[in-house]
Length: 293
Image (cartoon, rainbow, N blue to C red; front, side, top):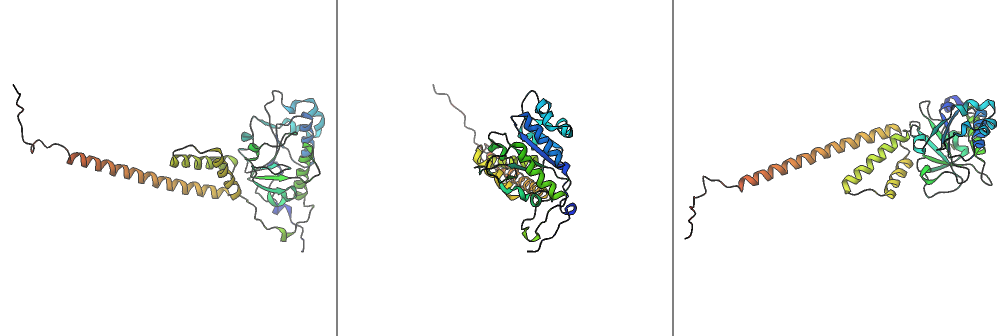
């Protein structure tokens, strides 16, 4: 198979500034500082942290020391969110890192596939790489918010900053055009117009609510999860979602109009039956009531 050097600027238009590193409940401030230093080495500067700590990791002395002065701007500019949902709601693609197969898991790929899977996205898109806590990784509920999961092959568990390093390296390598890509190996067309997480959640909520209305009962967690997985696996574009919204509202409008017409017809029929069965005093003979003695 013949290889060719690919022009990274044309093939990989996603800016590094649109790549966000998301640390979910990191336990050690020193690891946060190390992650910031690694990000700086590979041109990444957007750090998001999901944490409910009163004192942010970024203000901790250990984080400042490990980041060194070169990455202080990353720590100082980090955004802290109370929940994973809020940390990802404005992103078009979310990739969760995991080293083992989970029950709840969207499409999966290897860290080496980042150039093919992620970087072809246009400059209007934002991508998040999510890393779980050092002890247990990402929870199933966090993985359920991801469009993909990604693994980093290794003999054992990686330190948090090492995992960020592996991702940063693949992105930097591709963006600086220091690798060879085999054109014949590219069998998937990447989604260049992915909807945001909040848009997909809104569509999922719409489907769940409509099912609940039709079946007159609350949708259980399993069905809601199946709907989420179906939409995730479909890899819908933003245009796809907007089209489905249009189709959905068109059907709903027509269904509502039909229901109103049926209700009106039923009311008219009831009114007509009432009039036909009513008492017409002009036709009813007068019978004088005689009181018995």
